[in-house]
Image 1 (cartoon, rainbow, N blue to C red):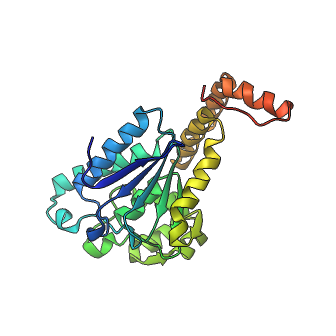
Image 2: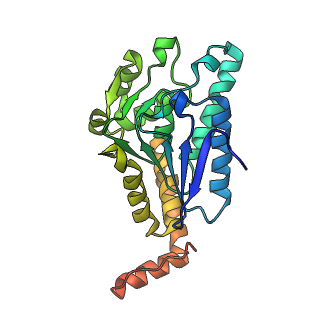
Image 3: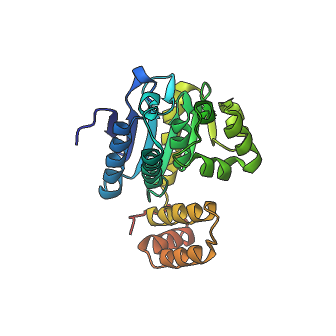
Length: 259
């Protein structure tokens, strides 16, 4: 499938880089771009040669500077709810992806951009990155899951402050509050993301997929202990489990096959 608003590049190690390619619009998310993200992640789910994903924005100024305001301004109460629900579905697809997804935040991540970054499993920010959910300035609230994921990541009090004031924070502040994992120079943001993914990909892929599921369940406020026990048991039935424990006992590096 050809994309108009995304650039997809699959490296030899199985890492798919998805670049939001609307630099002249500061990579703002319109409905067409959202649907392309949905299609791209269907490929991630379906194609075994794709092992992990890095999401970034074109250029060094913006990751995603928000949603398309001209498009949003036409919403009504009825289709506004459907608009938000569709965005939540697409970002949930990213959050629940069984393969690791890292956001390489290379500049402004505002509104829907912050929401996209928060839907990823790990966030690496450039030193010039800015984060914020300024929707209240438009008479709106975050609609793609921002009220929920920001609260999970930074806590209730800070989420109230950021969303109700619409304040924009620096990458350093975002790291301090737990919104991002690492802050690096802008030219290193993708490389740092790939470095983290390479480390993850050296582990057992079945176990990693269970980790994603269990942590997402915990973050949703549900009791995930039984789910964790079930996943642990499933891991014990895999070839990777036998290989990992054997390699440890034999004092050698494991060779995982994803089975």
